[in-house]
Length: 327
Ligand code: NAD
Ligand code: UDP
Image 1 (cartoon, rainbow, N blue to C red):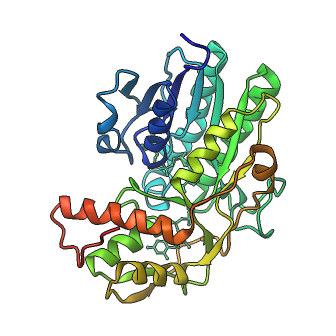
Image 2 (cartoon, rainbow, N blue to C red):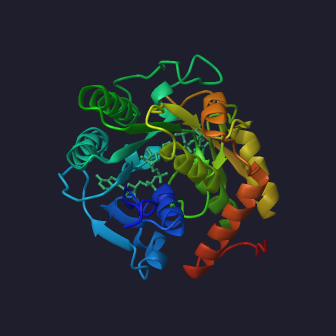
């Protein structure tokens, strides 16, 4: 095997981000082993990769041990949408914590470099704005989001302890809200919800008054950040924020989606879920200087591509889309 061609394990590889990552790694010439239990991921996301002899898909729940020989591991397995991670919160914590232990165990045994998809949720409902990596967060440990937030925080702890104790080569990134094609149409996250609602002419559901903010990164930009992070020297371990620093209110996002789809949907207001962060925006100066990375795709461009994806998907499944989007 050439030193450039690596055997790479992607846990959660059939999910939204995982499928884009598998695609990118194959394009870069690597062998990819995608491991997924298909809880929120879909075989359709990776169907187009199955004919590639360098790609292999394995159904496996990462809370159980796994014995494989690889050079690098990207640990993405974990439901990311509040609706899905709150569906079975105990399994969510197990996936983050036991899953991390299993993945770190593989890395230790075969001396693989290991990457953790952590999250801006480790900052909870932040009191520091924008969020820098040294901010320690404001997480409610007993709230409905805790299974995800605390699970991911504990996974970071495990990564850094394996690094200090066992000298593992780790790479930890904290991902801020990312969107794009292959999000699940019933994923429950704000971008997919608004686009599907707009295309179907249904009410656009804003939780709360829509004044809460997020900053949305297009998937291709994020995956580029992953690859750059994995390619850094061993002394770069993170955590490093990855996200698009352009902040927008949820209400403004709804209006943008309505405008771009030409939808006649009404905007309606629903109760705000417990512990919903008021504001979120990444400080990406570390990613900028260490990875020479910053997002390149503006929100309207990324939304147009995502709208085109959902438009085609809804038509395939026979849903009555209100107008044809040609982008
Ligand atoms: P996703 O739900 O589409 O992907 C998660 C994948 O993990 C799915 O394919 C799912 O089936 C799989 N999975 C879940 N539990 C598993 C288990 N026990 N064993 C094996 N596979 C399992 O979500 P995503 O947006 O692609 O997120 C991927 C990773 O990135 C997650 O770890 C998430 O926490 C992190 N992240 C994503 C975002 C974002 O905005 N997309 C933000 C922060 C962090
Ligand atoms: N949200 C909304 N309507 C929806 C889905 C989400 O107003 O149909 C809000 C949600 O309350 C939050 C923001 O949009 O304030 C982002 O939600 P998402 O679930 O996408 O991710 P989060 O950043 O909260 O994990």
